[in-house]
Length: 216
Image (cartoon, rainbow, N blue to C red; front, side, top):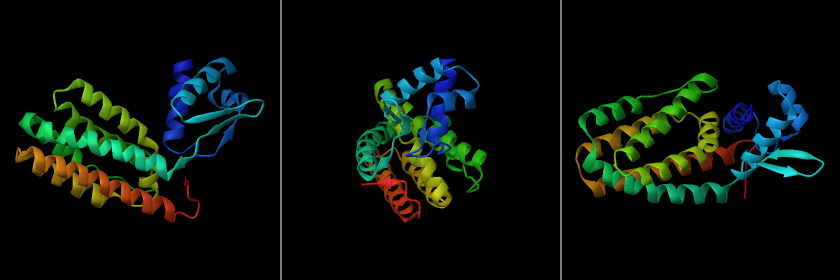
């Protein structure tokens, strides 16, 4: 039951159903999830370790805010990790893996439609994960995946705030084209450029929202 509560609450936080700053109690969440307070309490403890919720004695819990510094720090690390992943993948990718990347690069969504947005974000994560897996370095792959998961809230916020279909599709197909050239340094540069394009687009979109969820 704890795992079920954790998965459900984490998904709601990542997708914005429980937005940054939302206050909640164990009893409220237990009612929503139709379970006792104990697994909810244990799930909230795990989410607290991940930095997704904050606990306040005698007051309950709050979904943590997202800050510009959080985003900049996260994308700075991603640039280093995924730049290296791109360079190694350019050497190791098979033709079948390149074909799968091309297919993932075609993913799109309808803004405001939750199901297609979730599918789009999943395809984006799969695209980056597949490149990291192609490095043939499991440790690097695990690091990239963990940072992709940490970026989840930002990806959903960005996709909900603006139409990211054109830039994501174009960047992803450009990355695949560079990977096909088997040039490690060009692949590294393409991954770093894509990371920066995503960061800047997210920052502009989220700061322009009237209910801006970003703080400094």
